[in-house]
Structures are given as C-alpha cells and as structure tokens.
Image 1 (tube, one colour):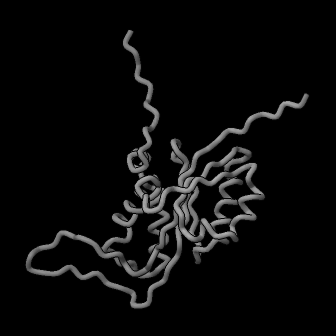
Image 2 (cartoon, rainbow, N blue to C red; image 1 turned 180 degrees about the horizontal axis):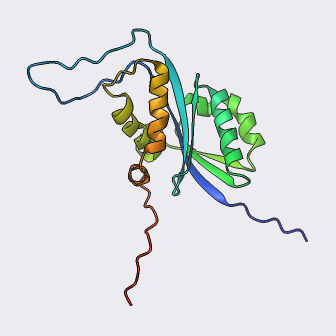
Image 3 (tube, rainbow, N blue to C red; image 1 turned 180 degrees about the vertical axis):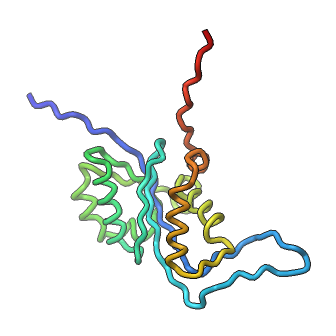
Length: 186
C-alpha cells in the first residue's frame, strides 16, 4: 500500500493594480489662500503590480509587469506555485476578465493538483484583503505626489513595500501577528 502524504494548503489573496506616472489626485490639506499644484509628466506611463498575499502569515509575491493580461496572470501564478515549493495554493481573486478568460483554463487545468482559484462575488473588493494594501500604497506613494521619472516612482514603490512595518501590514490585512511570549514572574 502506497501512502501519499497530504500537501499543506496555503491561502492567498490575489489582485492587481495600475501604477501610473501621472499622480493620483485626492483630498489634501491646504491653506485657504492657495491651491496646491501637483505636477504631471504630460504623457503617462503605466505598469501593473500583480500581488498575492498569504493569509495569515503575510508572506507575499509582488511583481511589476508592462501589461495586464491572462499571460501575465499565468506567469504570476506560476511563480507563486514555485514559491510554495510543493504546497497546495488556494488563490482568492475577483472576477476580472484576465481571471475568467477561457485562455487561462489550460494553465489552471494543468496545475489543478497544486492550485485552486476561488472567485469572489462581483463588486465585493472589501472581501479581498490585498485591496487595502493597494489603497494604503496609493495614499503613501502616488496620491498628490509627482516623481521626476517613472523609474523613480517604481523604486519608491518597491522601497515602500520593503520598508512597510509588519505591524501596519498586519493591520491592513486583518492579520493578527503572533504575540511575543511574555515572561511569567517567578
């Protein structure tokens, strides 16, 4: 009798967001006498940030791509499977066209032994935990701020992701980090 060990299951929340060189505009505090000016490059450049964050550990995979199509989604999922080193991945995502296209089905069928996607109901971004990370990133990196070059914007984004305190990340994701053991008095 052959005993096959069970695979460890891991839960990821996946989403993508657009990164534009033209700054996002939003509310800003200003003096009543003047209007705040935010520069713009004139011609916009765009990259797409695809991200998968594991619940509840907070581990993640974030990748920048020049386009946002099913090919890039497939490549990101392939990297996620490689990152999980034999574990089974559950990926929760929305119903974007790049997720529901029949062109992605052969990849999903080929990898069904390692990957299962779970689609969220339509118009329910509040259920996808990674959406809060994108919102916070926009507040801190792209809202009302112009970068002299698109490369500077991308470097600022990557640096921000690397420096984001884990406690703040956990708060955004609704993850409760493990408590440090407290010493018991003698």
